Length: 252
Image 1: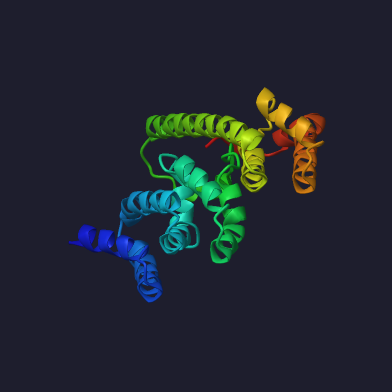
Image 2: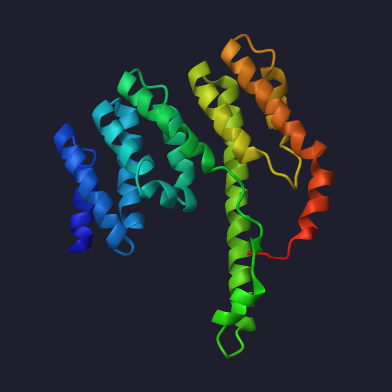
């Protein structure tokens, strides 16, 4: 029963009628906060509706899907679950070029949320040993902890690989797309493609370097900032590496 009601709410969130969308979004937000497993259940149909609305230029359903996915409690879940995140980012970029002021306004407001999806995962946890000892159980759980640490490390590696692949795909999109699409893609790809531990992909370096002399003034400024971002991590790397060992840390 809960599953059926949640899926009905998700469908109503992208209704053609404004009042129905608003009431369904409010009810869905409340439901997903209290029902375990509700968020992963409603994200796929909302994402499918988002993609379909872009193909058909259905602006009302597009607004409903974008608001539901990027402006509520689903936003963080969609960003952490990389089964759906690449499709959501690509749909967001496509929707950003829609010829509708209300859609453009939503896209502008959601830009920083989508950019945040590309940031690197945390690589360390700073612990207070005294606090840990207070809550530690009496039995030896080192084997369980090691197993969990390995699972987290594998998941992090898998997600970072997906981010790298998506960054390369968005670089190719930015090279050939209209300037509106290129500006959205370039803004997101900087977070996806730049990592402190590795050199930026060759295609990204080529895009940012050539983009600094692009004919469009907005893109020139964007790519110039991206080129500076590409150089900074390498310039300050030695200083940062000197600071890291000063903290007692445990890898997540």
